[in-house]
Amino acid sequence: MGNPSSTVRATPAADTSTGVEDIVAAVEEDIVLGRLHPRERLVEEDLIERFSGKRHVVRQALFQLETIGLVERIKNRGAFVKTWTPEEVENLYAMREILELAGVDALPLPAPAEWLEELESVHQAYSAAVDRHDLRQVFHLNIAFHRTLFAATGNPYLYQTINEFAQRAHGIRFIAIADEESLSQARREHHAMLDAIRDQDRERLRQLCREHLLPSKERYLSLYRRAFS
Image (cartoon, rainbow, N blue to C red):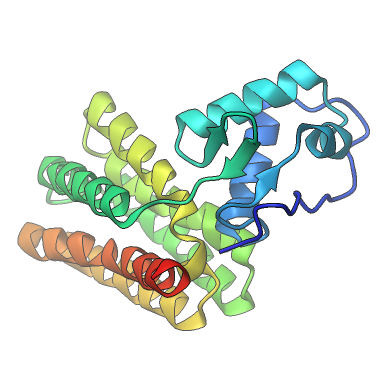
């Protein structure tokens, strides 16, 4: 699951100093797309060079990445891409299921036309990205689909918490996003969710959302067992 002694693979540095949020977004994307692996070290000097950033900005970005569960800092060793234990994964996904099913229960059915149209539009863009195998767009449009879905709950606290726990899982999802069958399955499940919304079938939508969480979790746990058992 990565070499603890390896360093972040740099891309060309930006022309100007990069802010905390930009560094967080870029490293998060690297983790999800498999450019950085669990237990891979994040070296401050490499990040400073890559982003033309100041040391305190890079340190703040690493702190934020740790806060959202993508990075762990080990005393006297530095910062590393977080490796989730099986227990942590099970607990995280148990919380995600609780939150997302509460979100489904709060969705308005029948669906407002404007919301359904927006959700369908995001799904079409996601599907096109899957066809192109544009993993960067797949990642961002998948986030957009689920945020558009749960934005309709009308509960900003529930919506924010669902998003926070989904973001924590980004360090687990890197296996599924690179797998073509996983992407095709996710696309089919998104389509089925839309059908359930059109049919005003809340129970089917609950089941689909529950099942949608499983593939990335199971693939990560399988990889973990092979790597560390």
